[in-house]
Length: 454
Image (cartoon, rainbow, N blue to C red; front, side, top):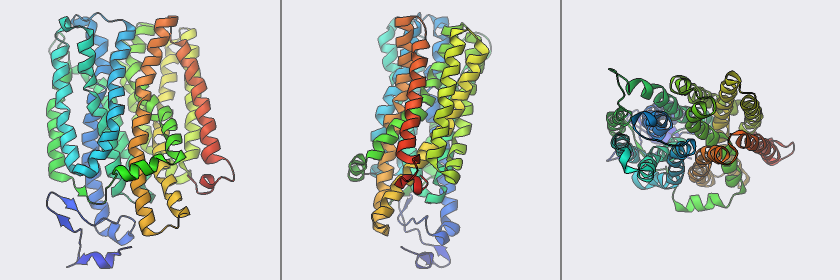
């Protein structure tokens, strides 16, 4: 391993910089390198990565709050149609996460952040035009909403990129902050849009999209000026294919459906559920943002707690809370209790936030353990870090489909049974199943992953 003594030139760390803000040498596990230059550079990239991802998440979930007011501008949609309108961007975002992960080694983390931020202009301007033209019909509206999925793709490239900047001992906190900064964009958009669209009186729903155009440009400019590309940040096809051969990649994908998929799915559906189940569009517009906000705030703490006691144990606890929250929500719907319904969803958001942080921390730890089992040489550990980066993209893509499935499940239950109770019963059982899978695979006494503190 290259030591700090071998990278010092004229009292400064030699990063082997190349044109285009490429860093050729990066060794965060070297304590001297980290103190001298690594921490400062990593923190700067993390800050502007968070900003870009935040705008991406906001654009991704724009339709979750816009659908509540579509009826006021001439769109007559059923509850199921509204839920589909919130689900489609989530599904497209999930699909885009895999190619977005590959974009990092091809273009560089900084360069792709610039491109992905500018792509956000398309769904923003599309929304601004579509909401004012109800004569175009429902299918074109869904297709325009689908373009918001580019905001969901940002997450995979951002997380894969930032995972290379930080040493293993600090990844849980760093990735948690990066993800939380993006996740909280859901809460921000659900809070700001209802205020902005009525500024000055009347209703100008097009502003929901237009307000994010200058912010997307600002994110691109900041990435251009302040971020860096890492030559080491490779998540090319080879490591990704290698990561697919590991059973743990698929187990973690399933767990991530339960944590992040639930977070994004509940965030998208919550305003519509408040309106359709309890007829309270006022609460949907004024208070629905709290759920996504709470879930986002708890995400880095889930990562920090996972750093301390092990991600698998924290994930088990989060699934216990999710099952309890889903059961409480079921009870509240059956007894028409809005207060319990709202509180149950807040518990669900807390649990998904904690689980988001802990599951993401588990991924890098799992591949570290696999590298140690193969001898732990510097070359082996680098190969495993690259596989972990590829696995992050795969897992985040598969997991994000939960954001598509959750609203669709509610739409199915509403259309076929007249209520969302069947969907909630399914979620209770699903979370219990995921709890059992996590315990058997990573917490069961005597297992290799449990001994390693995954």
